[in-house]
Length: 173
Image 1 (cartoon, rainbow, N blue to C red):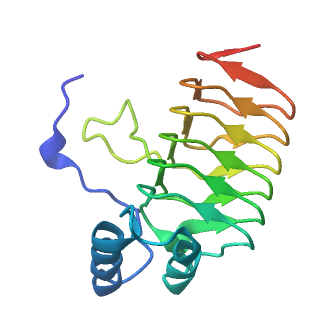
Image 2 (tube, rainbow, N blue to C red):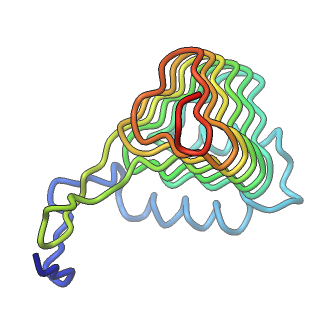
């Protein structure tokens, strides 16, 4: 198949907020939210101001990027490490007592491989209570990481991870 990216339409994808809100979020994200000097204790409040539902005692370190705050929900006692990227074109739900470590990527977006124009194939991500997404790990669209499961450092979770399971370097251990 010959791909034609010029024909991409993004049909059916709704960004969830008006352009002015999206522009305001990107300004806050890049000018303040990600900066090392911006207090971690203020980050949950900023996310809430843009529509996120953030639990209590949530720690968000510097360098964390959240694409659309209004598509983020966390439980209580969540840690999100430096440089993590929550690319949430669709909802990301993070249960209580979850750790998303440094440099991890939660990516709800993808494209239809068989689409000539590479249209979207997005899906939500759910991290159940007690899960851990370790440093530089990746969780892809449509995946649920079960209670107490671990996606190990640099591993990729491309399908659901059963509760208590360990995923290492793309394999289940």
